[in-house]
Figure 1 (tube, rainbow, N blue to C red):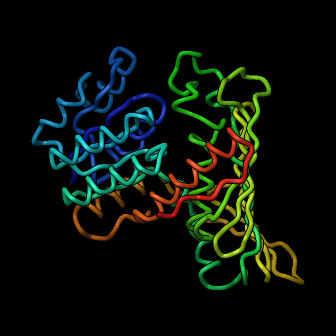
Figure 2: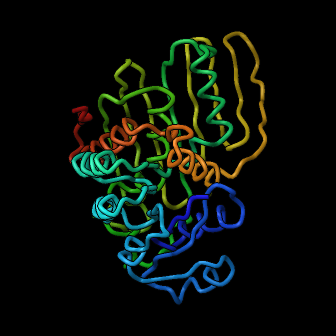
Length: 326
């Protein structure tokens, strides 16, 4: 059993606790860090989660083997480096960083310290995404021509204006850091590295400096093209479609997909549901104990930050931006 501390107990930190605590035989949270403990006393009581307001408290605690960071994006690099200096394994929610240079620094710190590194990309563990990956690897779609996706909702539409989630510094380019980054990660996994991006970001209704709606065009190194859209003010939508020379596959749900071969008719496939947060955390435990590498390789973590940084620049300038690869 891996003893971890959860750092940041807002919306997604709460999801982590509720998904893992008392349900996993591989990892558990023995401490929690929050700047507002009065807001999460229920978690403290219901999940036997002692709270502190200071990150340094859990870093100095020899019982804590790993930290799980569900904190504002700009804090990730310093928090990761601090954890590695104390020999703690690190799981960091996305985005890992907002700049490639920071991502490189964090990855180097983990490797130099010999600690495991995991990234929060729970959609990689969705049964539908796992199956789409298998289909592509097995050649069922032929040559990949194009991929497109939309991840939108209004879960964060009503957060207070002074929340870090509304900050243009923490969340540039509309919903890219919270939502679109799941699609860029899926694209890296399914299609490959991105060569260049072009983006259009606007503010329609929320009055946010960073915008509430973004569209992104992508060109992949292998020649395929892609598209991403997110909006922060609409009904929930998750959709991904991969088009190949031999057919297409799409999914609107974590447990279902539709596949259509050239000359055939669409066919639906359904899968047994999983808790993707629990699954990724147990994969992190496996990485810590040397059972298996974490399923999202460090190269993808770094590439995804590079794509994100290029999208920020493209949204700001209106130019087509080359993705940094070295």
